[in-house]
Image (cartoon, rainbow, N blue to C red; front, side, top):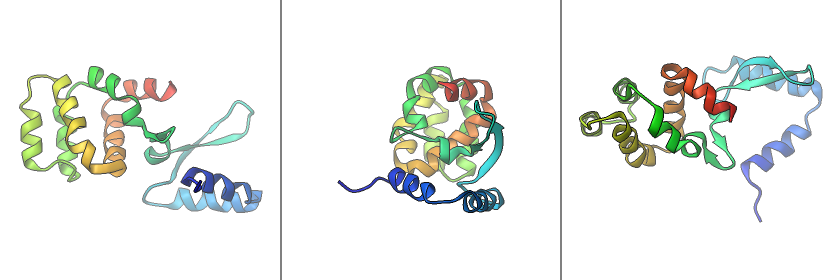
Length: 148
């Protein structure tokens, strides 16, 4: 059975000594794009633990974070038109999709249409962009879901 990306990463990180790992973290912090370490927080052991940007938290058991929490997000996300505006600005939504989704009668239907249409075709990069937007516009909901 071929190795997964996760298996390869674990194997690679196990081979790094402390100095090499420190250099690796420094390079991630300096990156402008993803993946990059955003900040450090204290873990239960008292050691400094990295807190990562969207793409590193977005995959949960081989499923994207947004797919894992699909039902909750459809039920609880509000002000979807603001989200649609930002997705269109990023090029994830074209004007036809934007128009079709924004004219739906309520936020539940808009989120469902977003999942069933553009999010299916945009892949993990588009989902990571939506995750970032949700973290910005719906911080309390996203914090709650990330703790689950």
